[in-house]
Image 1: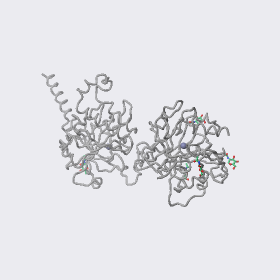
Image 2 (image 1 turned 45 degrees about the vertical axis):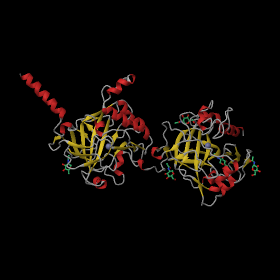
Image 3 (image 1 turned 30 degrees about the horizontal axis):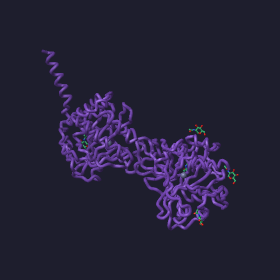
Image 4 (image 1 turned 90 degrees about the vertical axis):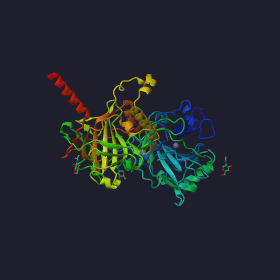
Length: 574
Ligand SMILES: *[C@@H]1O[C@H](CO)[C@@H](O)[C@H](O)[C@H]1NC(C)=O
Ligand SMILES: *[C@@H]1O[C@H](CO)[C@@H](O)[C@H](O)[C@H]1NC(C)=O
Ligand SMILES: *[C@@H]1O[C@H](CO)[C@@H](O)[C@H](O)[C@H]1NC(C)=O
Ligand SMILES: *[C@@H]1O[C@H](CO)[C@@H](O)[C@H](O)[C@H]1NC(C)=O
Ligand SMILES: *[C@@H]1O[C@H](CO)[C@@H](O)[C@H](O)[C@H]1NC(C)=O
Ligand SMILES: [Zn+2]
Ligand SMILES: [Zn+2]
């Protein structure tokens, strides 16, 4: 009994005399971080918005084993605490599994809700930004722990979070009628003798489908001791029963606003069906279809014989006179970029329709530029994440300008051997910035900045606005593709027939890989993995099979080297 009272006091009331509330007092949620001795300003706070495209597959999250969840003798009493409605439990249940380390014993469950008159939703956790009508928290302590021990251990408490959705049409369920009939407007505990079990309340919810993350209590002192389980499916309860929580208690909007993830990962149990960004990934640990298994995806060409990227061996490249210079139309247009998108696999800059074109370069057709995007590795200073390799050397990044034959629709282009043309540029760290202490002389740095550096700064500035997967930002800066490419020699390149480097890997791409890399400052290169938080977004090199890689003749740098050599030779002879 003492234990139960302590739980009551510490988790819901005013442990050290600091008043807190949701509304109507000084310490509303935005002030909770200042409560003395509390943890509400910490780095693993709850609740959160669970953004499903950001969720990782948690192969380690096995099924739960629940003991006595169907027992109808486990409810002790129900109490209106003034902050919520809480049911204290006899310590007769336990659960383990579900990726938890150890066994946990439920001690109480309580509810969070919104506004009674219009059923304004009031769940604490959000899924893809959706707030459910209510949320039920089954608070459980690690077996053998006192409350103090549990609060002091980063995994001392496991809370099972069940979302509740109001259902107008469904017939009322007996257990919920029963439970809500005991909601009181006074704060005296009422003994519960009715035959209700936790399973009766949870009903049909599939308990193999859940999200997992490390968080905190959602009320002061917000102890960072909670391993959270939020089940994907909501419990359905009729709306008029749910209204009783607020109409009887006069308590409304008792949910804490969502907290910053601060770099935490949210995992989903294997039974959760995550949205399509997860159909494939680069690393097999992050989803079911890592790149080794892309060929098994529906409608996939990833197991074909003209796949990309490849390792280009420069000495084997065949000189081809047809690979003349390109015509770049509107590459100098300062407003051609429409938006920047975080796809979950890359940062993609989408161009305005039909504005920018490329032809010549032995392509034989006019191609419209659709978008450009990037491939990178990680945040380390020697990170290498280009897709193509040159003489087995990987560059820090690679930029792909994706174009489509102007005379074909996209669907047609994807099914035509030369329907798409991709211009690939290696990106290298520019010299002199690797160990620069330029910050000390910002003015000087500013004035000496090249157009190229300014363009990359402007572009990477958008990354902060699209950190959530699936988000996009309108591109409003004046930056042309020419600005980004700088003075790279665009007459000197390799050419081969290949594919898209992401599923469905359509073998529809005429590849152009420019020999000279674009120079970009290291700090800007690092912004991609830092802001996007996903790493190693490049496909490994594919077998050439019987393909030939061609090279343009006009290798300007080679030509000048040749001239110098000739001159030197002449001089020597003379
Ligand atoms: C968990 O339960 C689901 C549904 O009953 C089942 O399909 C799955 O195989 C189980 N997983 C494990 C690891 O036992
Ligand atoms: C489950 O309930 C039974 C009585 O109904 C009890 O004997 C048993 O100890 C309970 N199990 C646990 C783990 O508390
Ligand atoms: C599991 O819990 C025990 C104590 O309950 C702890 O000593 C151990 O470090 C934990 N293991 C992991 C992997 O967290
Ligand atoms: C509680 O409800 C009862 C009847 O439902 C009412 O008579 C009483 O005044 C209420 N008390 C408070 C404090 O609201
Ligand atoms: C690409 O394939 C087409 C059709 O098979 C062929 O005519 C062309 O020469 C190939 N180009 C290269 C660069 O291999
Ligand atoms: Zn709660
Ligand atoms: Zn690409």
